Each structure stands twice: as C-alpha cells, then as structure tokens.
Length: 219
Length: 257
Length: 48
Image (cartoon, rainbow over all chains, first blue to last red):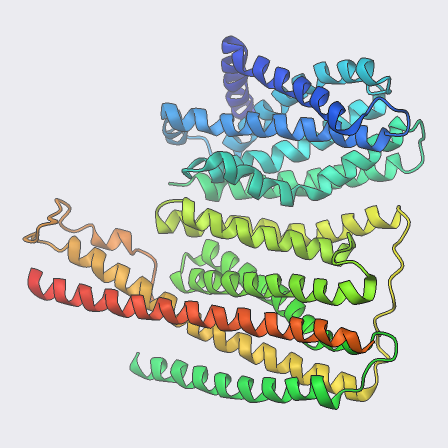
C-alpha cells in the first residue's frame, strides 16, 4: 500500500508541478459544461435530468483526457519500464495509477461543481451530489486505468480508449446521472438505491481492473 | 497429427451438410408450415431467424470468454484461436440480431429501435465486439494482442449482465413503452417446432463456421511460426539475415496441439 | 397485415446475404493464406 501511495504521489507531484495539464483539464471541463448549456438550454427549471447528464458527460470527457495522459506519459518517457523493473507487482502499480487519476479527477470535479451550481441554480454542491461524484469517479478511474494501459500501446490510443471504455461504463454513467437528477429535482426517493448500486459497481470494476492490470503490463 | 486433421475435416463436412439441410427445412417451415400469427401477421416469422441469431450472439461470447480465460491461464495458442474465431462470428451474429430485430420492430412497434434492456445490452455487446477487434489490430505483436484482447473479453463478460440489469432498472423507473406480448411459453406447437429446427440448424451451422475459422487461424499461426523459424535459423545466409541465432522459439513460445 | 411480407423477406434476405458475405470473406482468407504458404515454400526452397 505504501508503494502504491508512492507511485500515486509521484504522479500527482508531476501533475501539480507542471500544473498545465490539470489546469487544462479543468478549463476543458468548464468549457464543456458551458457549451452543453447552448445545446440543451439547461437554465430552464424543467431540464434537471439534462443538467445531470451534462455534468457527467463533462466529467467523463475530462476523465478521458486525464487517463490518456496517465500511462502515455510513462510510455513516452520510458519510465514504465523502470517502474516494471522495481520489485513492485502489477497490482501495486495499478493502485498507484488509479489513486493518482482518481485524485486529479476529484480535484477537477471539486472546482466544477460549485461553478455548475452558480451557473444553473442547481444544488450541485449538495452532499449527495458530492458523494455521487466520488462514487461515480471511483468506478470510472478503476476501469479507466486498466483500459488506458491497454490502449496506450496502440497507435490510435486517443480513439481506442473511449471506444473501449464508454460501453463498459454504461452502468456507472446511468446510475450516476439518474441519482444526480433526483437530487437536482429536490427529491430523495431512490438516491440511496442508486448510490448503493454505484458502490457495488465500484467494488466489481476496481477489483476486475486490479486483477486485469497485471496481465496487461507484463512484458 | 494427420488423423486429427482428417477428423476435423470430417466434422467440418458433417456439420456443414447437416446445417444446410436443417436450415433449408427451417426456412420452408418458417415460410409455409408455421401458421401466420394472429396479432403480428407475417412479421412474426422473422423470429425464426432473429431468436437463433440472438442465441448465437451470446453463445459466441461465452465461447470467447472460455477461450480468453483459457489463454490467460494456459497461454496456449489454441485457446486464443478459439477466442478469435468466436469473436468474429459473434460480431456477425450480433449485427444480424440487431438488424433483424429492427426489421421486426418497424411493423410491430412502429419504430426501428426501442431503448429497452435486451436491445440496449445487445447494442453494447456489439460495441464490445468492435472494441475487441480494435484491440487485436492495434496492440502490436500477436502475443500482446491476444493478452489485451483476453482481458477485455473477460471484463466484458462480467460487465454484460451488469449492463443488462442497470438498463432494466433505469427503464422500469421510466414509463414503460407498450410492447405487444411476443408469445411466451404458450406458442402453438407448430411454431415451437419451427423455432426448434431453426435453432438447432443455426447452432450446428455455428459449429461448422467455428471449425472452418479455427482451421484458417491454425494454418495462419503455423505459417507465422515457420516464417519466424526460417528467418531466425542458426546460420543466416538469406538477404534478411538476422543476428539472433537461436531465439526462434521465443517468438512462437506458446505450445502447439 | 399482409404488407408485413416485405419486412419478412427483408429480414431473411439480410441474414442470408450477410452470412454469404462472411463465407466469401472466409474463403478469401483461405485463398490468400494458401498463396502465402506457397510463397513461403518457394522462398524457403531458395534460401536453403
């Protein structure tokens, strides 16, 4: 676990030190949220479920950017080989990468949510929305870390990653959007059920990704 | 070795002949023998191809899953060939379920498509198959492609039931579209018999295609292996001379049957 | 109701055409493979 944290810490340090990428990811998320307003007219009171969808699409797109980067950076600099030479097993490398992706995404989301709340007058800073954001992002980052490793060796990794990831993440997207829409509508019924379901997805997806990662990075 | 190959050839021929005969009978039964459905008219007859296609789409995925688990476990080329062959056929059948389903849906539902759990799951299945081929073709060296694709196939196998369940839950929270009851267990015997003949005929046909495809893949692997052996043979005198005298085995390391 | 006959024929036609297309493609694979094997055999004979 300590080793996983060290890998995560290393990645996060690189991100924050360069700062450009995290900033770019954040700017991209905000631009997406604003652009989707022109597509769906989200400011009108009856568009709460569209707003929930727009929010999660923005998060998923930002996440896709972040993921494409996580392992591509290592491949480009050739540091993954170095990491593989160290006596650290694949699962630990996965946990490190996963945590780094998760934390940088949560950072972007933490800034986006209050902005979203202000722009659309929706309770996006509600504890339930924050809880859902965390739970939804864990599942995304879990499968995402595995598939960014799979896609990174390809020549077309930018296209390959969403093509592989989006279909498999349908349950997470569905659950997260439905539950967020319920909060936006000012209701409570059914949130807990979706939340529990998302937690179950997280457990399954992160476990699968953890187990699969060792098979992917063995060279 | 020679006898097993002859055996495979015999099976290929046998399944080919049986399936062609059965499918001809099934087509006759679907068009002539089976009665016209009172509610759906002739469109109901589409089910005699649609239902077997749906079955094969998922059966092929089960085979893909078995091949993938087997490959990651044993690292045996035969398992990977099984997975490759199943994926290609599964993709064909999934495409056909979606198309025949849409052609049935148009006159009966009045729409080509419904965001209903089974349809949505099958569409996602189609995308997973597509992703599988993308991974295979872009992953580079064959061993790595096989490994990556196997991981994807296994994750997909576990994900598909989850997708089905989540879509069903999502749809039941929304107003349910009015769907005409499509039969259920109390089909007339003649319809059931037609479906059964078609079902078995298509399943044997699938077995036939699998045998053919597996043989093609085996021949391809053998050729690649021999080419690698040839290029890396101890003393390089050809124009593509290599400096690796004895590493030929590494390339084809997986065991052969 | 009889109009649905068009849909019925379309469904069967698509199914069999796509399966025929797949068989054609498979046949093409066998053919190129056979040629590749012949090419290799020739090369190997020359190289040795």
